[in-house]
Image (cartoon, rainbow, N blue to C red; front, side):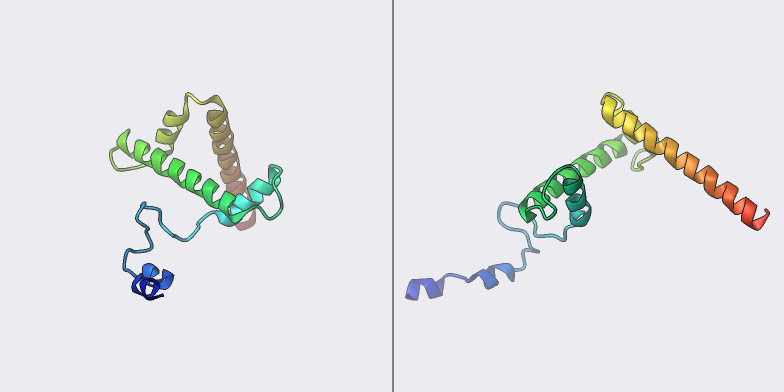
Length: 125
């Protein structure tokens, strides 16, 4: 019993000032995309309430992908800035991603034109 009291408890380990990062470097951070990922997982055939561990792993992969793409995009084109063209350049060799980005950019332009036409019709500028 005396040995157990000498070891720090779970609560003390969390308050050690490490910023929520354990020895392996894994952080206990706020989950940014859990709600969206849960919905996407359900849409792709998972359970309506997927395991939290599954969502966390998927979120880690998404954040890792976004981070890597951002770092790569910052290193090409104008240094230190991320532009749409840089992302398109990076994914140009992946046909599925390239087609999806192309579709999204086209849809974005169509939405901009529709909003502009709607505003002009309503406000007569």
